[in-house]
Length: 292
Length: 306
Image 1 (cartoon, rainbow over the protein chains, first blue to last red):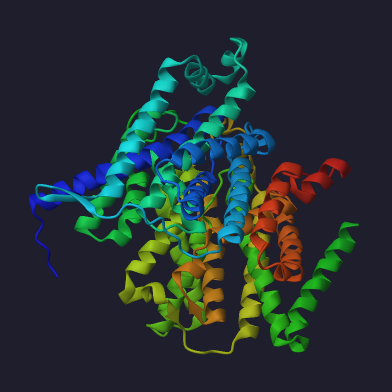
Image 2 (image 1 turned 135 degrees about the horizontal axis):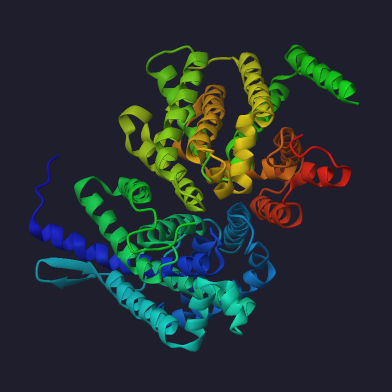
C-alpha cells in the first residue's frame, strides 16, 4: 500500500501535532515542576491525570455538568489530593535517592488505579459531549482537540505567569534553584513543596478532563501519560520550565509525523528512540536543563 | 556458626535437587516460579543494588529473552535450552544498546530512560506481527518439560547468586559500590565509572533473558502484555529491597518471603490485590528502605555485603 503524501496532509499532521503537543506540554509541566523543585520522579502523575478524567466523567454522567466547566472542580479537587499525598507520603522521599521516589509514587499509582477500578470498574467510558470537526479550507480538526488545545494553552500560560510574575512563583523557582538559599531567604520550603505538588496534580487533572472529552477513558490510561511526560521533560531539559513547552510540542509533532510516515502504533517507540538520542547527544535536553 | 550455615545451605540444595522425584506437578511449577523470582531480584540487585543506578524497566530483558526463545523454538525449531541461552545473549545486546548512551549520564536520567523501555518493546513486538505474532502472541509446541525447566531455573538462580557473591567480594564489586556511594569520588580515584556501570548492567541483563526464555517455554504461550508488564519490574525491585539491596542474600530472602506471601495471601484478595501491593511498596520504602538484612546488619554489626 503506497500513500502519496501531499503538502495538505503534512499541514494537517503538523497542526494536529501542535494541538496534541500543547496538551502534553501542560501535563508535563506538572511533572517537570515536581522534579525541578523536589527532585522527585513522580510515576503517579499519569494516574492523577486519570483521576481528573474520572472526576469529569462522574460529574458529566451524574449531574450532566459541562465537561469544560468541570475543570473548575477537577483542578481544585486534584490540587487537594496532591497536597494530601505530599503531606503524608511524598514529603518523606524528597531527599532520598530516586529509587525511593520512583517506588513510592508507583505504590501510590497502583493504589489509585485499583481504587478507580473499584469505583468505576475497568470498563472503557467516554464523555460524549462534543463530536464533529471544524473544517478550515483543506484541513479538518476534531472540535474537542481544538478546544482542548485552547484550554491547555491558557492554563499553561497562566502557570507561566504565576511562575514568572508572582511572589509565589518566584518562591517556587527559588526553591527549585537552591533549597538552602531559598530557606535562608525566609521561604517556607515545606509549604512550597505542598503547593508545587498540588499545582502539578491540578495540571495533570486539567489534562485528564480535556482528554476525557477527546478519547475513551479507563483506569489504566494514566501510565502512558506518565511516560510521555517524562519524554517531554527530558526532551525539553529537566528542570527547565519553558523547555517543557518546547518538548511537549515536539513530542506531539513527532507522534503525528511518525503516524503519517510509519504507523500510529509505533509513535511511542519513535519518541523513545529520540529520547535516547537526545540523552546521547545533549543530555541536558534541547533547552539547557541541569544534569544530575 | 558459618560452618553450620554452609552445611545447612548444602543440605537445602540437595533437598531442592531431589524435590522433583517427590513433588507434584503444581509443587514443581510453584518452586520453578520461586527460582525465577530469585534470579530476577538478584539480577536487578547486580546493577541497582550495587551501583545505585535504578533499572526501572528490567522486565524488558525478561521479555526480550522470552520472545527470542519463543521465536527460535517456534519458527526455527531450536532445542529449548539453547534458545533460552540465546535469549540471555539478546537481552545482553539490548542492555548494550540502552546502557551505552544512558549510563554515561549521572543522576536520574538512566532511571527515566529505563522507565519506558518495556513499554516501547511491547509496542514494537505488537507491531512486527510477522515475526512475533503481534498482539495475539506466540504459541509454542507442547512439551512436558517441567522437571528439566525446574533444574534449569534453579541453576540460573544459583548462578546469579554465585555471581553476586563473586562480584561483591572482588575489586570489581568494590568499584561498583564506590560508584554507588560517591561517583565523583570514584572517578577521582581513577575508576572508569562508565565502563564498570556498563559491565554490571550487561551482567544483570543475562539472567532475566534466560529466565524469560525458560518461562516462555514453561508456559507454552506468550503475548506482549504478559511478558512486558511494569509490575514485574516493580516486584523484583520490592523483593530485592525487602530482603536488603546490595547484599548477597537479601534478594533471595526477599523473593522467598514475598513470593510465599503472594501465594498464600494475595490470591484471596483479587479485587484489593493491587491496593495491598501498593501499600506494601509504600511501607517497605518508608519503613525499612534498607531491608531485613540491612536492619539485621545494623543491629548485629554484620558485614555490609553478607
